[in-house]
Each structure stands twice: as C-alpha cells, then as structure tokens.
Amino acid sequence: MTRLKEDDIEQISATLSDYDQELLAKTGCRLRELAAYSVGKDINRPDDEFLQTAVIPLTCGQGVIGGFAESVASIINHLGFGAWVTDLPDAGGVAEAVKNGADILFMADDQRFMAMNLHTRAVSENGAATGKGYAAGLERMNNGLKGNEVLVLGVGPVGTSAAFFLARYGAKVSIFDPDLRASRTLVKEFAKFGYSLNIVGDLNLALRHHRLIVDACPAQNVIRQDHLREDTLIAAPGIPLGLEAAGLEQISSRLLHDPLQIGVAVMMFEVL
Ligand code: 2YG
Image 1 (cartoon, rainbow, N blue to C red):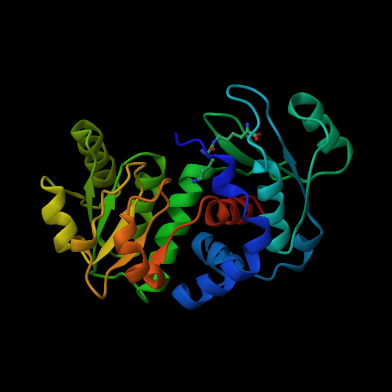
Image 2: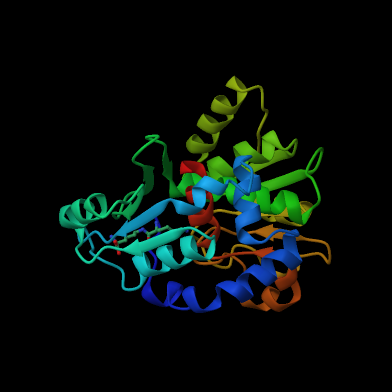
C-alpha cells in the first residue's frame, strides 16, 4: 500500500480547476462526469447536492498526513457536494461528524482508505475505486476499448480493479506483476467471470507491443521513453509515476496520473 507524502498532495486543492481542464482535454470529461460515468450513475441527481460529507483524520499507524483530509474534502467540494474536515481525529472525529449531520464519512488508516454512506450503508474502498476510475479514463481517452489490447502493470487492488473494468469494456487485457502467483490467481478469478487474462512473461517486449498501458505499480522508471509511440496512452494510478522523466513531456497530453482526485471522485459516486 503506497503511503502518500505531503508534497504529493499539497497542490491538489489549489489546482482542481486546471486539473478539470486537463482531464477534459484528455478524456472529454471533467472529474465529476468521469466519476459518474465510471460507476454508471446519472451525473445530476438533485437530492445528492444536499448530502454532507465529513472527512475524519486518523492518527493510527504512521499518523496523519498533513493536508490529506483537507485535500479529500476539497475534491468532494469541487465535485459539487458539501464536505468538511472534522476538528477532532479518530473516534472523536467520527462522533463529531455524526453529531453534525454527516451523511457520508471518508477516513483512511495505513491499510484502507474508505468511504461510507450512513443511510444506505454503501461503502467504497479507494484501491478498487481508483482502478475503476482509471479504466474509465483510459476508455474515454481511447474513445472505447472494444477489441483493444491493454497492458496492466501490477495486480494489487488498483491493478486488479482496473483489469476487471477494462475487460468489461471489451479490452483484451494482459497483466504483468513480479509475483507470478498473484497473476495466476487473478487469471483464475477472471475465468469465473468469463474473462480471459493473458500473463506477459517479458515486460520489455510487452511494453513495446502495447499502445495502451495502465501503470498500477509503485515501481519507478518501469516505462522508458523507448517504450513510447506517438499514439501511446497511459493511465497511471500508481504512485510514484512509473514513467521515466525523459518520456514525460512527449506524452503528457496522453497520460492520466494524479495522487488522489480520480480515486476520491469515484469513491464519492460509489456511495451516493
Ligand atoms: O488521516 C490521515 O491523514 C492518515 N491516516 C491518512 C493515511 C493514508 C495512507 N494511505 C495512503 O497514503 C494512500 N493509500 C491513499 C490513497 C492513494 C491513492 N493513489
């Protein structure tokens, strides 16, 4: 589980409008539209506007990440919903949220980042939501994925979710993970849903062969400049970004990568 650092997230709140413009240029959707699209929900649900969301900082484990709860609340507010960070952390914060009429709670410890709707009991976990949102982002960037080959790097919670939704969009999904057993387990899981996954053996060959890539692994410099073509599209939920700096400026308009925005937006729409 990657742990964000303060400097990964310190710019989020101030740049959400620019972020939306960039996302619109890449996918044809702003963040709210992409999140609604990824969960298959209508974007305008009038009664949702009044839902109140509380984000509760948690001090357990390695403790609070400065700006984390504030960034989550700012993303939710940017989506058009009311959100605030509780004054208290932990149990006191949960009580404060409930007492002050929160309908939805967001909180993260070192293992799980969860959202929950106190009325419907719907819950959402960040890893699965992030994979779903990035699969939708790639599908929009490519104007559909039916019959397209997509390479997914990393079969953790994010990569697994991304692979599942890519398959649902009709993509031919190949996976790579250093842990071959994990890949084999995923192949069996997918077969239960009638989806066939291909495990790539040679990563270099696979990176050269694939135009569409989901980088859901925490490794750095996995994707090199010589792996990129002028029509390569990369959806990279993995932190830190696995693309080496040399390749960055040439592909920036064809790269989806953010530390929190898409995952939080999908979590919100999953629990609405
Ligand atoms: O409340 C706080 O400030 C801390 N307890 C938050 C700790 C979050 C730890 N998890 C992570 O940093 C990431 N897994 C969050 C999601 C990253 C999305 N790519």
